[in-house]
Structures are given as C-alpha cells and as structure tokens.
Image (cartoon, rainbow, N blue to C red; front, side, top):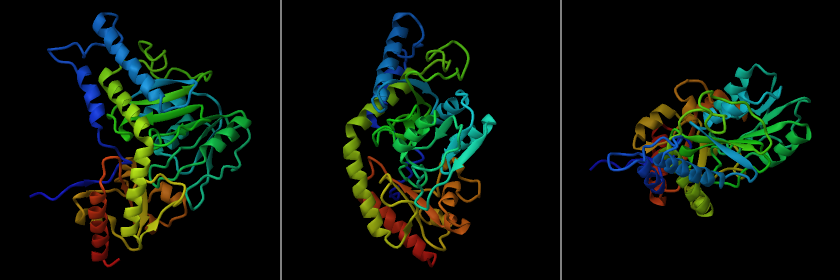
Length: 363
C-alpha cells in the first residue's frame, strides 16, 4: 500500500473545495447544455452566463469592504500590477516583506520608492515614517512566508492623512480574516481560498480612478478587457461564500492544528511574531538543518522553504532576511501550511516525520 501523502503547503495553493467544483461544472459546457456561452453575448445563453458572473461578483464582494467594486482578473499578480501600474500617484512606499508581485511591479513603474522596514517579528511599525509626497502605500494583510498579520488599518489611516492611497495584498487573508477596511485597493485570488486557479480580483473603493489595464472590448467596466470564464467566476464565488460562512470555524480548526504542531516541534524556533500571525502558517527553523535532504526524506509530506514563487532561485528568502535572519538561518527554515481539510492525524504524522528526519541529520 502506498504511503499516505500529506499536503501542508496551503500558502502556495489550497485544494479546490467540493462546493466550488460543483458550482463550476454547469458552466464548463458540453453537448447537453449551453453553459459554455460567452457571458458578453446578448442571446439567452450569454445572458445566463453573464448572470452567473454577476452572482459570483457579489459573492466575492462579500469578503471585501462595502463601498467598492470587484474587477475580475487572472489572479492576484495581475490585480496588483493593475493597482500599482494603472494608478499614477507618484512615489510609492511598500513593506520589506511584500510579495514579489508587489515589489517588482513597483520597481517597474520607475517611480521613486521607499521600502518600509519590519521588526524581527516581521511587522511594520504602524507609526513608521513615510516619506512626504508619497502617493501610494502598499502593505500586505498576511505575509505569505511567515504568516504575520500587519497593522494595515493604522497604516491605511497614515496613508490617507498624507493624501496617499493604500493598497493591500489580501491574498493570504481573504476569506480567513476580516477585510482591510481602510484600504483603497485590495488584491485577492481564488486559489488561496479553496477556489480555482486562473482567476482573482481587484477591489477598488468607490471614487478611486484607475486607468484601463488591458485594452480591447471594454469588459469589466472598461478596466480589464477580455472574455470572462463563467466557470472560473462561479468557482471563485462559491469558494468565497463558503469561506465567509466558515471563517470562524476554520480559524478555530487551524488554531488547534497549530497548537498540536508546535507541541511536536517544540525545539524548533518560530520565524516572525508568535502572536500576530495567521495560525495556518508555521515558519520554523532549526540550526544546521539541510532542507533539500529533509524534503527528500519526507517525500510524502508537502512542505516548502518559503514562497513557491521564489523557489529554485538558490537565494535566501528576502522576507527572512528582512526580519534579520542570517543567510544560513534562512536556509535552515521550513514553512508548514495547513488548511480547512487538514486533519489532526495528518499534522501528528507529518510533524513527527519532519522532526525525525531532522534528528537523522544530527540536528
């Protein structure tokens, strides 16, 4: 019998919720139905597909603040690029632990920039000095590598006090925590909240003007042209509605799993704040650990060394460097990410296997 495979990489992607899959199927189409119709067509089948898109838009909006609109995109990377590169506001400030989708998009604008430092706990000081004249401040809600929850409400206030807009990458927080109410622009993606890959959204506060991102047929109120997939939208919407319904229960479940994991991996050090963090993300380090060997020895457990987007570069994690870890400490670190469908039995089996594999290395 094949050994049990345990998936603990939920920051990279989450499994598709059965409810999301069920919502998608009618819109994949086939000989027996018209679900494949273009939602931008005016005939009956097209109008039905368009109605499904709008239902999904409302479901996704349910995870976000009131007083804004949801623009569907191909994912959070596109949403962040649109927010950053289609809003001409001048100098941009961003935290030192932002995702590369933010950092590289900011640098690509050619605008003056300011990197906001973080503490050893991985948190931006809510009273951090922001350069005069800054037009856009970008700070994520939950860090994808170390799980820290940033003080975005106060930082948004600070941005507004100086006349700047506030952009929040809420990819890891959407559907799990209350939305960042003070934000002007919010980026999320479906596949981090048990929806399908290939679709995300940019939330734009009412009254905020942004330029079109993709020119063409004028879809998405002229901001992002291109034919929408009713199936992807429906899956995103169903996943969002389910996440809102299960938010408290999911949090309690993951808090229990985190407590269990920490009891087994008690000799490992947590990277980042132990208090201000999302419980489904444990970033741990152990002096002398060889991660590639650990991964090989625990081949039936899916864990990572950090961001999936930065894997394979060989460079120490930019996030772990920002919180003050030396290169060898960053390389001695692992990220364990669990979710809604992870069981206590899986956590116990996986964490004992991880610790045993580390001990076999003599660490």
